[in-house]
Length: 331
Image 1 (cartoon, helix red, strand yellow):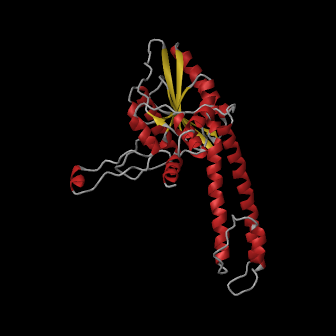
Image 2 (cartoon, rainbow, N blue to C red):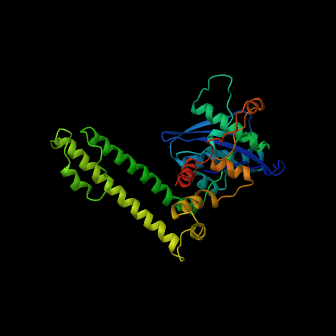
Image 3 (cartoon, rainbow, N blue to C red):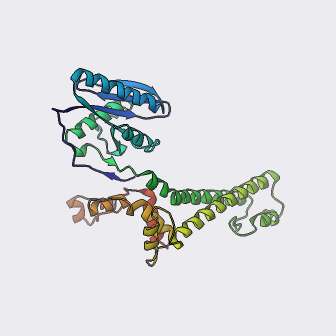
């Protein structure tokens, strides 16, 4: 997820249009919508059933029609919601209906630190709406706007992200099987080696006996799940290698991946991660690049530097990308 601050806000043309601002708090159970119109300084709120986007559009259209009727002017609708579980489909739906929408980085919203934070859907929605109104007044630092990828860009990242999840799942299965074997005093069994199921039949406990039947059945089921995950990883890696080797590949980022792969010490996986997570994005300066990849230097006080304390690097940015860099450099 790329975060950027937009400074070239469009000017408000009060003589021609009026603006209605909407903030949406999303959850699976309910959506809380807060909005402000030129007809009143107060914030109005509506609770909708979760995921009912048609009712949301109907509400926005009702407010737009009422404001247009009473002011006699054209109405511009601007909305926002926090990035999270729901992804970007709602953003695309709102934009398709002529609504200017912003997807916000939740960590960038300003909160009051003088007292314990009270968190409810109503309070969060009001805070989000006030931040939107401040942003539209020309205060770009009130939050950070998420760069919404296209459908094709979002789909192109699935390949290496799915492989990362499967690799983590493979590690979990291996550790679980080794842990079950360790209960019987066996520490040299590697479930990733060939003929793992056949070698399991030959294992004996530290007392020289066979595995207890229930424990053996659990390990066998674990080996079956592990074999399935390994096959899935092999399928994804074959698809990834085909992108690198096939000049006629139709993958969105094929040319960039192939160019990166020509460099020494960059394999197909690291090339796919770099292109999928960095090189298809736009950055305004080097500091934004460093911030995104987690290489932004942490500032320390001058007296601390005098005492020999050096600056460290903040663990910010994309965690998966930072992990890939560390893994690549440690090889």
